[in-house]
Length: 113
Length: 113
Image (cartoon, rainbow over all chains, first blue to last red):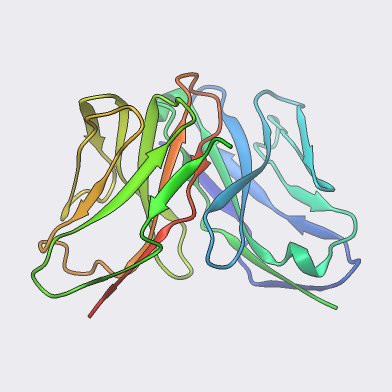
């Protein structure tokens, strides 16, 4: 079956630090890959997506590149802000799961001023 | 604005009581989903529906029931058979094109009195 493994948190950074959250996956077929963000007490918001190999998704200064050879979709941001403090989820959909979303367990990011 | 509305935001259940969580979407999406989120955990799929009058069990359907009488509505009932219902419940929807991301509501937090 499909699975997503993302780095366990919590991750604590100072403002303006560089962020990487690792995400690797296993899937049948060619998955679409997503990063979602969840702020405290809220639902999930789509942060970025990539639907084929070598695609780069980007939004709000965050980027992730679909790497088929390493089955990875790492999230990066060059300079984090306090407002980026949230839980980040890596996820995929693929034909093998009837396109249901498979989530990683989430990574809590805390950014200190 | 199009989106997903979940209500209520907070809900309390007494022992032996059934409670129903509402989810309405005006995105004209075909598919709708219910997830359960426990503290520090990822999301687990309870039920999903790809068309009106049809739905399938997810990974943790026991103790829950759903209906899909209208395209825009997908209510979830937490029955008394669900012995540990305290959690954050998230509703989502997606277009028929299965590579597209799911859109989430703001969630309902259910607690036991």
